[in-house]
Length: 349
Image (cartoon, rainbow, N blue to C red; front, side, top):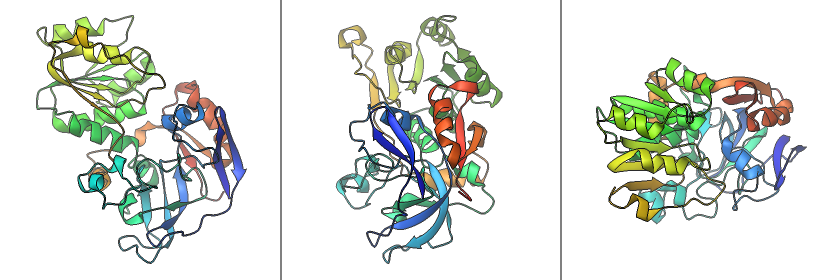
């Protein structure tokens, strides 16, 4: 089968690989129908994810059809259309029982797919703990609507959930990329008074307003985000700030635009260490929440998608076949042609 393989820092390749087999009674084998490229794949390519293992098939955001299940799999059946959770988790360890599935202590637990074990930029993939990591897609939900359920939509949903948003709050989101757009979409579920988004890409900012995700858009350099947000909030600052950009100075912007006693959620994955200037922020009494998504809400997200409350399908701006994915990587990594997300068709490959 064809698969995109991480070869080491700076190198990925489309190669032929053996079709995976069941290794554990809790496994399932999925025939991938639609996959995509994530910013985390680019971080792996850059060598910025130390846990990533060279020789691993990339891809952790995809949908497909179950072709085989192990004898211990009870909730998933061959023939089911499924979306795949970015995280594999046992459901039994200390962290899983508390919902912190990103920290599952199993060797295959947490973010393993496409990082430490073979992922879904391939024709077939093995999914450990299939009962926990697969969500059945309702018949009336398309593959494209379900594609982002297990990763960036889960990220936005998790971020909004831990952001402690109250009705009529002012929410600021730094970064209008795919994860930022999903964060805004999910923040809307909590009925804030306004969502302010900060980015340097005018196309993405316009998209966020066009889709009703943001009320106010700000461009650093053209606008002074700290000044504007304070003016909008009687000098206080934002009630909740989501840092989703991961730029060189965006973390500093995040704590500066937050009001005293606000929650700052760091969603971004940084490629460089960040400075926490405690003397400068002393007295703001901020609450910081950071880390990787706990993708334990996939069923809720699918239900919200099925009833029309969430729909991330508009993020797909580009489509291609698996044979053309290396060109797609170039376009996505270098943000060409106003790309937001790819839908990579694996059917018939």
